[in-house]
Image: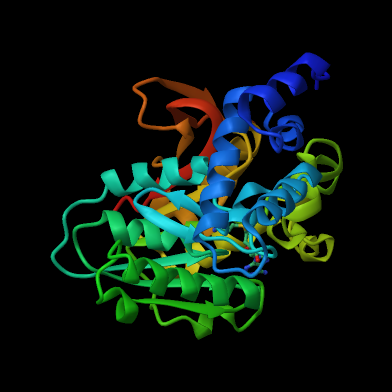
Length: 336
Ligand SMILES: C[S@@+](CC[C@H](N)C(=O)[O-])C[C@H]1O[C@@H](n2cnc3c(N)ncnc32)[C@H](O)[C@@H]1O
């Protein structure tokens, strides 16, 4: 990353605020520094605290200077129409996730009966809460995560967004979050859905390889976001024939083969991983019902751009939709 000129620090101090030079190294531009400082000031002003206002702003800027993500300092992140509460220990929702989930909801037919939706590795609960806020029909939704911190925050996000009227009151009954390990042998039998009745299964699981985490993952993510949310534990790979970073998809496909949901969307890290996951779907013996339906979505799947790519060792081609980085693998049941 190029070093910043000392003159830019002077400009930040003179044109924005004496606090601005603290934010400049993480924000990189004057515009972005001015924006972050405004959000920090608004946050400090809205918080009841015995700490004097200026000291509060200075403390927040020092945290940001260390690389602590802004969302952990401010305590929230806009996500579609929702306000998602964020706390250290739970992954911050990303705009790419918002983009593919929003696109998914545009593909769903109107349904007068409640849609049954399962979100695995739910974190803050951002995916199921966004689906619930965008769908005109009511839904019966379950979000699952292994982390007690995540489950507690997802429940807070449910009540917080009901209190802001971003979700209807009925969501307090129709949306539930539960702590569970999706690799546990008893996981499937603990679910309240029988085979064939789920409308949608979504998941944004941990998908970064240990090497990729050490080499390519941004410093603030590496230091301050939970590794449990990002890198699959190496011990999970035993019994699965795949790369360590793909092991969650192998397990998710076992779950799909039993539950036979009508539509499935997985978030992935890039086109290479999307291609490997698409191959797992095509090869999966118990996934015949989904043959020929697999699509790869890029960051912005709403875009008209489309191409077809061949899968390795396979005659089959899949459609790649949208623009940007490879972000999702989507497939649906043919008989539906
Ligand atoms: C990439 S984060 C996604 C969070 C959220 N869905 C989002 O999009 O922001 C992955 C989540 O998987 C959870 N997780 C990790 N291992 C798990 C397991 N064995 N069973 C269930 N959840 C798990 C982590 O706690 C983390 O919240």
